[in-house]
Length: 203
Image (cartoon, rainbow, N blue to C red; front, side, top):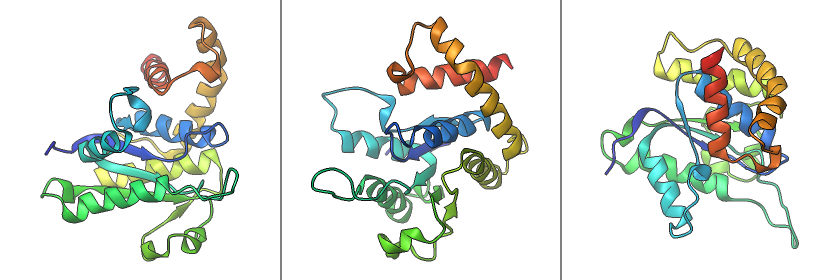
């Protein structure tokens, strides 16, 4: 079994265009806080089973950020999205049944409303769910505060400071993409990681 890195953060959330602002904010906050953002989008290997890939990433991450906002019914016929609750369950299971290293895992559970989760995943009642109300700044503040507390790091900036930096980054992003001959809808997770890391390093 691989050891869980104390600098790796598994991000479990929706990846669609509608949720992208929150996803990008979480990734930016994780990197700016000095950690490495990981998620299922980091590799594109058609020969690898998606669930096995997610299991491997979970195994390698000390921390997990799980956003359950996008579990509403969708499509035709309308069916709920259960990927995020499933991956949260896998993360909690690794902590509960894994070795000593896996038992050090820590999870931040986010939702758009404080108690909405009770309508579709009531078994996690008692968990300290944090609401962000679909707001980017609130999301960043939640993530930064949690990472600072869990890691006991004195180098993680305050959430408001990171949110201000993210706003500045968003303003610079169109020019950065243009310089890379990339459209926003062509930007992969790997592209985004590289762009955010370079921008933070240059600031």
